[in-house]
Length: 373
Length: 246
Image 1: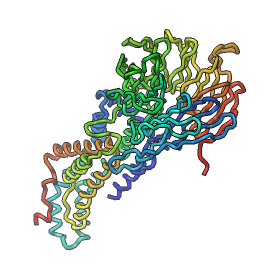
Image 2: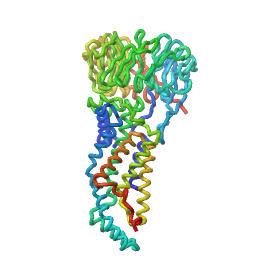
Image 3: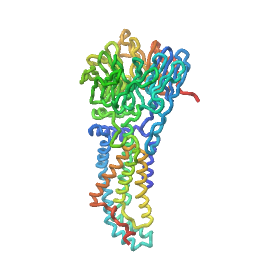
Image 4: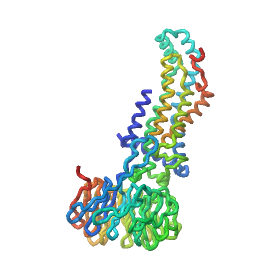
């Protein structure tokens, strides 16, 4: 009996202490609008930081929603205030979806909530970022549905009739009057922006890991079978497939007819959009979790270990595949980031914002998002 | 230490489980059942030893009753004679614990594999990428569905059905293999074990993901079937204890 109890102890400890799993902490991305940085923090707040003064303008705390637990499970009832998506600013409002399953519309002036959908309860954890078109905000949820809400008052305009998948963790993409969303079970759905009715769908053998990116009627999307797919809208077979070493987790970006994709194998691939032919690759040495960013003729890539690489796509100063600069911020990076006016705004996993001066190739300033006791 | 554990046990169990899931039409519950059968096949030599011990104990019952009659009042002598009898028959009464102890690392690895494979948070899903082998069969199976019958395999069973099945099957399996004893002190220990183990595992079923409890339930059922055919019946499940027979 004692032998059994002693032997079971590690099992109980493993489950209660780490369980071999990580809790939802979030990796919210940054948005900059009129000199103000908007970002979600690790402790479940949305903050606005003035990029000139480096001061906190306002902070809004997401209401915690306790995750339902079943049985007598230990360690499964944490408050789900994590934020994964990137805030979106439209006119005077910043919009964000939360892991607690609510969409928040906050005033950019003072951070007061203008509306919350749903006001009580949850539509399921939101991991992707919202997109806005025609005064409507579109967001995908872990309940497998896409929701369309009026930007002015948060009133639901439509939601998909039934779940499109077990859960939707990717962000939708909008082109003209159609919304495209990729699913973990290997589908791409094209929905009418106005009604949410299904226009077209594509089915693949492997699930799609990344959000779709659309350029000249071709969808580019990364999948769990370590491939990047190019799918012409309306077709049932992919135009081409490109194999990497691991998942293409982050959505690629397109510039000047070239697709730039970061891969969890630690490489950045430049691929010809029409043929899928590899133009060059660069080994960053650490997984690339977040999407690359284009700024003028520069490609900015941040790898998970916190090194920011800058590539000159015009290749005026040499080989395009060799980074002009490599800047270490000293913190892991998983969050999407943005770049404006020669500065890249990156949220580190240590809950700091790092502002990198791309021209100078150095860290310009940084600010902690953690509230000091 | 953790890296060694993941390299030798954690990641192999995870990848095999995911590969089995792909082979079984993406059904993670069936993959756990298949893995249980594989583990039972691998541990068959130990199980066989345990069953042989169990059968030998069953055969020893008349001799044990004789010793009880002869040395019933001298506990020390009875114990000495019993130990001698066990030694002569080459039986270790605690031998039945070894197959269970050997399975503990598998349980821990399976628990971790279930939680990692089902990736309930985005962090877990991202972490999974670093643990997968570059097998197509594994990568094509991701992400997995946690639904199986009425269960969410990443969560404990909210209806307690699995707890009853795990506890019940464990009681039956123990009852089939637990030899009646003549020593009153051992009798009370045996009775406690017979109740405590199913109760403890029933309780653990309420704490752990139902995927792990599914493993326990299927493993118990396989144990019962094996025991039934190996010993040719229900064993001590219908055996009257010596105290009842006197």
